[in-house]
Amino acid sequence: MEFKNKRFYSVQKRTLDIIGALSGIILLSSVFLLIAIFIKIEDPRGPVFFSQKRIGKNGVVFRMLKFRSMVSNAEEKLQELLELNEVSGAMFKMKNDPRVTRVGKFIRKTSLDELPQLFNVLKGNMSLVGPRPPLEREVKQYTKYDLQRLLVVPGCTGLWQISGRSSIGFKEMVGLDLEYITNRSVILDVKIIVKTVFLMLGSKDAY
Image 1 (cartoon, rainbow, N blue to C red):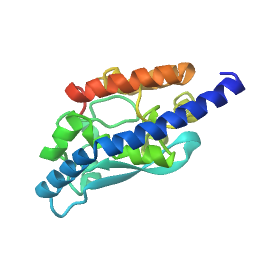
Image 2: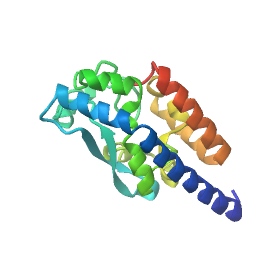
Image 3: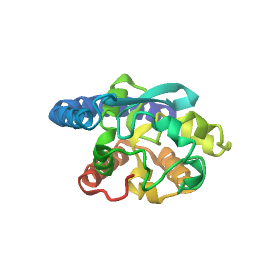
C-alpha cells in the first residue's frame, strides 16, 4: 500500500469499526443480557465476562473481553491438558475440552462468546477484521515470520475464522493472516464480516 492509500484505508477501517461495533452492541443488547443470565444460572459464583491478556499491534499488550465459556479455574487446569493439544504450533485447541461449560459449548459453537470484543473494537485495541490476537505464551514461540502477524491491529474475525478455524493448523493460520495483511481493503473487510455473520448462524467448526 502506498502511504496515501494506506492512510485513507486506515480512516475508512476505523470508521467501519466504530459504526459496526456500536451497531452490534445496540442491536444485540438483548442477546448480551440473555447470555449473561444463562452464564450466571449455570455458575452463579463465576464472572459473566472473561478478561485475558493478548498481544496486539507491534507487541502491545491489552485485555481482550469474552463471555466466560469455561469453568472459573480454567487457566489453572490448562497445564494438565497441554499434552492433549489437537493443533500444531503455538496455539492450544481441544475439541472436547473438559473445562468448557454447557452454556460455553453453545456460545462457542455459535461464536457468541466473542461478542464482548465489540467493546475492544470501540476502544481501538482491536478491529472488526484482522489476525486473531495471540496469547503471550504463544508469541514467545513465534519465529520472525510468525511475528509479521503483529504488524496490524488484531481482529474479531478474519480469513482464518472463515476458512475452517479450528480445523486449520497454526502454520496455515499464519499464512492466511499474512495473505490478509498483504491484500487488506475495506471491500475485503466487508466480505469477511458478512461471511462471519452467516457462519455464526450455522458454524460447526468452532470449539
